[in-house]
Length: 208
Ligand code: GAR
Image (cartoon, rainbow, N blue to C red; front, side):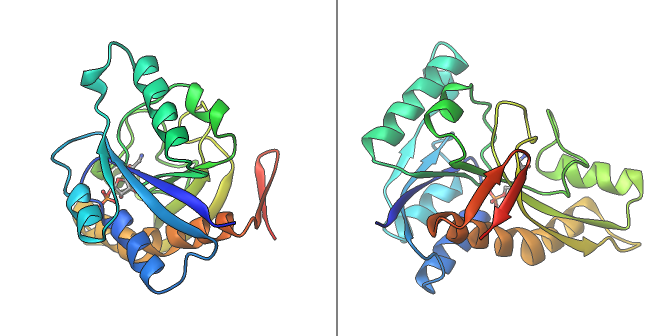
């Protein structure tokens, strides 16, 4: 049976676009993006969803008394929409354990570094690349992992690396990592999940 996919976004949505494009090329086998949920009503990602004919929803932290109440509303919405896979694609809002209890090993996140480097609380977006450049690493990249309660610490599904070049700015490095890593491994991981080809064994994910 085809899995219904919800993509959670907060901003520009280039990773959402990569998923939509992959879907249009027939590369998301066994799955269909049926909802885009944004933490911000003005996220450009919502326009991308609309253009692709995918229903968009807004779920803002400010509309709820607590992070837990917001997470409960999110889980309720996901259940209502009969979602089987949740993809965090540039989703910048912290959620509580209710999500991972309801969707155990069924929430994927894309992070713009080679985890366990440059990740964890406060390490998101451009900050990640600033830290990588400040540290002087020669390689960086992106990671798709299952989301667990501990920030950026869940089992790793796919990683891809690129070279860091001498004159890189955070923006230039971010763009290289998006183009060459994120936009490739996120659709791949989603397709593998939808084909039931990801088996989680402790911290290790076996690709069947
Ligand atoms: C992406 O680079 C994504 O990896 C990163 O935010 C950007 C969102 O861009 N996510 C994180 O830093 C999560 N910790 P997008 O909205 O264009 O996909």
